[in-house]
Length: 230
Image (cartoon, rainbow, N blue to C red):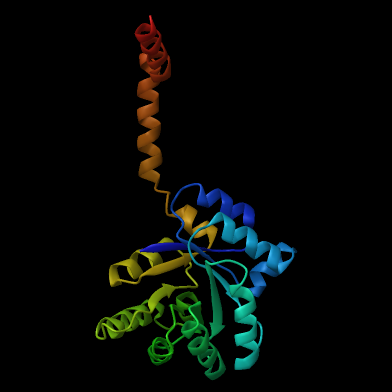
């Protein structure tokens, strides 16, 4: 499974990119607005930090405006993915932009029927929002299972399932078990995936035992280097 980070905070992206675990970034107008910075400058910085797809959302609601905005965004960097809403006009724009070679992320998907339409429109990614469905006591992960099953039945479908609105690590694990291609995670969720109390407990025990020996790996390595040089 590929991991995208769902933020427009350049500092967060830079920090997490250093782990080598990021495959891409998703943004939206709300996330960029929180940064208080110029929309285009933020996107250009993010695209330079992460070589994988960077989703940038259009703000128009009719297909012609979306297409024009999508073309403008695509000029910013080769890894820009234009994000369009799952509406009739959004899918019209998707069809045109993908035909021109632009990656398109169709967002705000809440049903398998919508996901099937997005695939037929040539979407690069489909973004089902599982957390928002869970908020309404609906089965967000069940939607992922349905989409993965449908897409797998048609080898000609190349659209990747990008799990969005992720609230906790279990969402990621369960979606991965179902075969979803990508999960886009808030920074806090990705950081939480590193954590387990037994890892912390075990590391603490190892370090205490090592401290009792009074030895240092770096000191020994330095002495060995000096001996070789002599």
